[in-house]
Length: 114
Length: 115
Image (tube, rainbow over the protein chains, first blue to last red):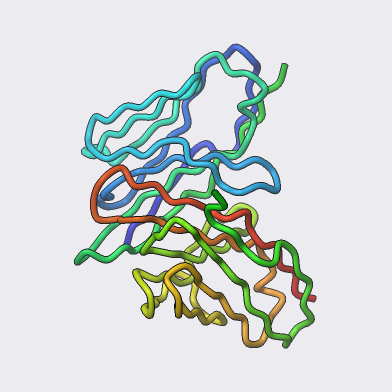
C-alpha cells in the first residue's frame, strides 16, 4: 500500500524567500504528481514526474524526483503572494495494467506574506 | 472544451436521504475516479473505473456505490446519507495510466453537507 507524507503541512513565508516542500512515499511509485489548490477551487496540475532524477520547472516552481530516496521536492524560488495556495503531492501505482488511482499527501498550506 | 464537469456543485441532504452525483468528461478518457476531500486529510479515493461497465473500490468505499454505464459518465451514489459523508467530492479522469506523461484532470468539486 502506497503512503504519501508531505511536510511541512503549514508554511508561512515572506515574499522573496526560497523554500522547499518535501514529499516522501512509502513504496515504489510509478510516477509522482504535484497539484495546486486555491481555496474553494479544484486541483490544478503542476508537474508529473516519471523517472528518477526528473526535474521540471515552471516559473518560480521546480519539482524533482529521487526514486531511490522515495522523495520528491517542490522548490519555490523568490516567492510571490500569488503562489499562496495548498500544494499536494500524489503518487500512483499501476498493477496488471489497471489504474489504482492517486494516493495524496495531506497537503501543504502555503501562505506568502508581503 | 468542458473537460470534467460535476453536477451538482452544492447540495444539502438530511440524514438518510439518497442522492447521485454525476461526473461527465468529454475527453474520451478511459479511467475515472471519485475522491473525497476532508480538512487536513488530502484527497482519498472512493471508487474508480478503468472503463465502461467496470468499477472498483478505492480506499474509502463504504456507504457509496458507483456506476459507469457510459464511457463519458461516472455516477456516485449515496443510498442513505450520513453526517460523516459531509465532504467535498471530486471527480477525475485520465486517458491512459499505463505509460506516458499522463495527468489527471479534476472536476470543480461538489460540496455536500449532510445534516
